[in-house]
Length: 150
Image (cartoon, rainbow, N blue to C red; front, side, top):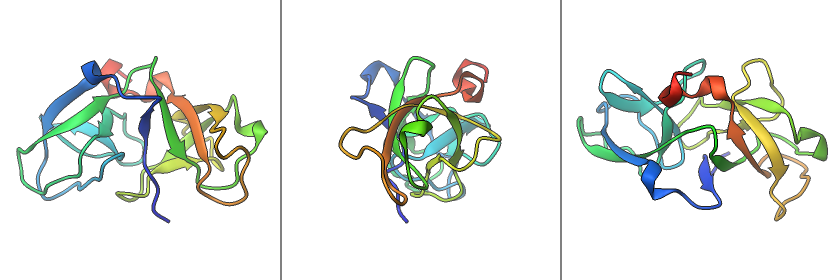
C-alpha cells in the first residue's frame, strides 16, 4: 500500500525548511519520506537511524541537487497514516515508524520496540479505522531526532 508519508500538522513552518544536497542515485525518497543527513547529504532513512527530517520534494537522482527538507524538532506535530487498524487506545502510545520503502512510510501501530512516533490523537476525519491507512497525529520521540542530537 502506498502511504502519504509524514506531513507537518496543521501546516509547515517555513522557517524549519532547509535545502540540502541529495546523496545521488542511492537512497531514493519521495515527498513525505523520512530522511537522514549523513556525509554532507540527505538520503532515505533506514531502520534504527536517527531521523533528520521529512523530504518536501521527490528525490531527483542527481548528486548534489538541493532538496527542501523539513527539519524535525520536538515541538512539531505531524500527520501520517497507520500500518493497521487504529483505535482510541493508540493515543498516548509511542510506536515504531516503518521506513522500509520510499513512498510507503507510516506509523507501525503494531510495534513499540524501537518507538519513534508518539500518537497524540486520531485524525477526526477518520476516527478509529479497520485496516491500514487511518491517519494519526503526533510527534517524534525526542531520542529519535538527529537534528537535536537524538
